[in-house]
Length: 370
Image (cartoon, rainbow, N blue to C red; front, side, top):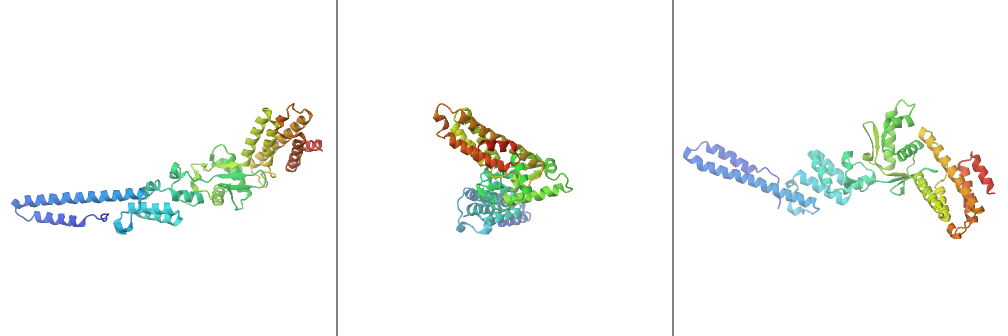
């Protein structure tokens, strides 16, 4: 049975009464009454220690996830700290956003947010759920960077080698994303440093605007809403934009596959190399950076299309060389015939010539396969 949350008013009253009595009795009696008062004070402090000890035990039971049955206490018998821990446990078990908000509001009202933050380390489930859904946690960003809360950080994949597609935890994001927002996401994804100076963003996206700070603020709000991204993973601090969520792109995947293809080609495994080349070129579904006109988009469009043109032409030339000078062993082809690889090369050239219609070298190469 948990001792009620009280300051032992009865003992205090008794002590005050005895103080008055001691001053009114003869001196030879004061010693006995004084000894009795001393015993009352010992009893008072012992009672406080017992109360404190039992409350600590109840708190430990709560933090260990054990249920404290309602029969064992009444609501008014619990301290605010214990009630806060129990409310967090309930939110951790139910994963209901309303339960977490009730716990946070109670801790804020009782001015025990320090204890609230401490007990969240024991019951992080509600925070994992909020981060997963992109809902606000009302917690400091530094606190959310603790390892215990990094379990369910959303991961994003951006496909921009054609019509833009965004995936959150491998599920497509259905909300329409504007070209400016897409360009901003690409900027974040391709940036080597996840701590980006705000001035570089201003120069790239709003060079001629008079309201650069407001434009950036509105864009960040929109990005967080579309991606369901917690504020702790995309925020501005001391002149820098901090981006802490994993974000990969199909362009990064394209470069990785090309490296694998070239390694196989150098090793003499041309048949397997062809398969890797085809995987890489397949990632292009159209013209990248469509309707994006910021400085980085213009530069990256030129870089990516030039690389695509060069790699496609080199692939086609290598296919022709293997046709004219076939290897001695058919196993080097990995079971793939010359005619089949030439057919693939022709298809790749025709596909990419539509993405880069102004390339004269690409047109010449297509004509060689006719």
